[in-house]
Image (cartoon, rainbow, N blue to C red; front, side, top):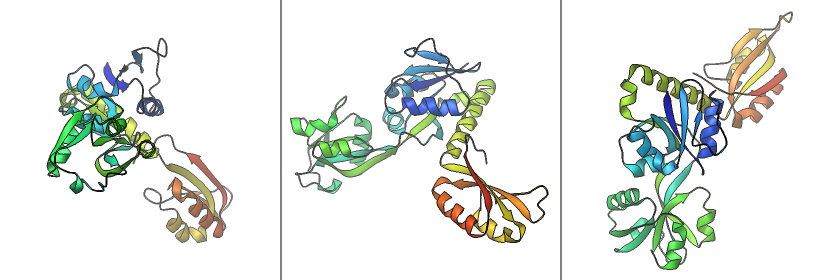
Length: 287
């Protein structure tokens, strides 16, 4: 049984559950507040605080886990990153009050107090930047620290920046770009059975990540237009061409297309006389 540590709430919990379900692992729980769930015969989910997941995995209480890169880096334990899952994107940023005149890290005076829930990352960042600051660890709500006199600037997670703006703060620099990671304890991949299961899980999740933002497109085109079709539909390794039954001059072109390119691709296909254009979502995609 492979134990997967998952966030029990917060910004990563929903994304972790969704990507596992899309990979084919269905949650079987006694009730919605259960601390664990069956994910089929080979996997079991353990619901814990996202902050604790790196420690759980490093100590062997779980075999793999899904949590943010910021938390993995802050923990400092030896973990193996198996896959960047792509969701939960945010950044750990340095922010200062809008009225204090600090617009760069180099402008931060010596002795400045920095409030953060990420003392290890903040300390490492400022030391590398040659800034002599005082780190003030806080457990949350770092954005209010400058207004309470607890600190002069903060290092905190930012996604849209709206919370900073609401509190009269502005970003000065980025410490770390973060997203959800699949991590494991290093030794598990050396185990013949457990290692195989973890690799299979990684491949399944990777197929979901690859499918994100992609669409499967099919269109009927004339054979004499295939040279142009290949330019319009590059696909992964070029479009797949299939004969259309009882239509000797026509073929069906199939390709994987980036969702952001659909409007252009469809317009160009229509311009060369393509018909029967069909676009569908892709659940999983392997190279």
